[in-house]
Image (cartoon, rainbow, N blue to C red; front, side):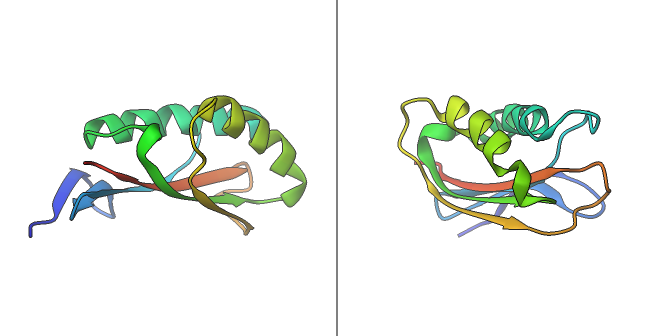
Length: 116
């Protein structure tokens, strides 16, 4: 089987597809002045875009890993997350606290989804 690479850069790919599973790289918000909910909303719009480029969508999510710089932001992040998913089945998910790429980056999200 062949690994398909999407939007390759010098450091990483935006997504890889192998064996019917799309793995999307960690995504962060462009507007770092937003709170955790606003950053999450921006990230989830990017997730939608990346999944579409992989030929899938959020209804086929398998796993999400959400990184927060501060667990106090989890309720705000969850507001955006649950609104985005609506009535869809929830994927497996982990949410962890860790320093991210910059002090202004409050949220980073990594997802995988079925493509078939």
